[in-house]
Image (cartoon, rainbow, N blue to C red; front, top):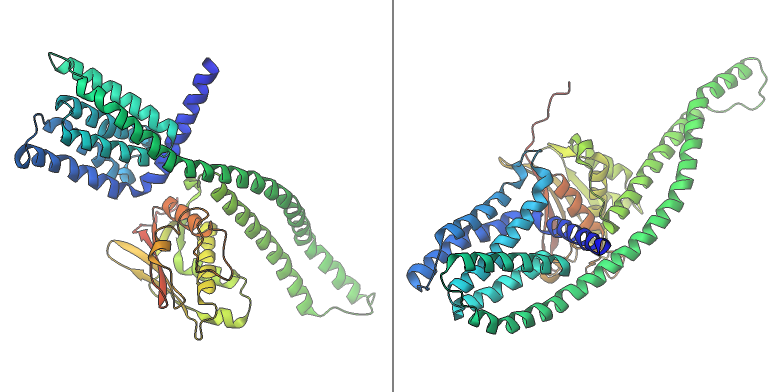
Length: 440
């Protein structure tokens, strides 16, 4: 029994983390619905279409909980460990508790029966997991029944019990429709994560060997060069080596070390998308966006000089951002790769990267004149494993833009896409204004 309880508890905690991870980046829009909706419907059901029972205090409490979500970005560090719990409390109170309590207090009338159906539908979406949904629904409903029993003189549950089969039908059917594809997606993630972990292990071993050999060469190269010069000065060498060869050798060793570091970062990027690993914000530092983009373009493996010439940059309005240089370089890699794919076959392809500074945010624009992305695709391109149907050549795995989104969210930044079929595609990366702290 204890083992089963522990398993259920672990599943609920994991599901809660998934729900928070998926929805909390969009808290501004979700919260505005609650902050505006709760008091607005009080006015509607009190003065426009009066209902038997209304409670402004309960509605203001719901609006207050949603209001707290809008301020997540400025929560102090001491409160951040409780964000998931706050999200859980908000879901329980504003959906199953509030709607069930109001349904009971209004005698199960038509308005609140329909409102209850709407509340259940929203809860199914927000819970993002069958176990979490059942947990929040049971806790919220039981608390509402208790509050109702303590509030009224005579408990009347007839209408509520009559409506329960309808709610049960809604819960079962929508859960099957929504959670079954989600479950398949999770199984796909688990399988790919397992394969990715195995592949990464096999790749890291030779990469470590290459790194160690390169380190050894770099450490002993000055001694070898010194020995070569002594031998040359004493006429012990018949065929001398040109000085530029030595310079090339030094640069090659440095390039090998950089590429090993680069390859390890790609492995981390893939595993981050396949698994649930979090970006470590403790390692973030301040970087110049212009320097990051320049570095990314210099390192990107273009297929030809023509491809490189397609990319035009305007970095005059440089700005600082707080994040990881390696991760940001790979965000640029992904966006360049996408732009090259979508401009493939265009008579005069063009890719423009522009920096801009506004009073309330800094922005990076990636714009190409390629085939464009349909509205249907634009709604889903930041999801894992979604690959645009327009990519008839060079189609990706569908994790590149999901990776970009995850990284930018960790930087407290955002990415959005604007496009018109046959005309252009533009990705806009928005970064908060930051003031670089003085290093002590």
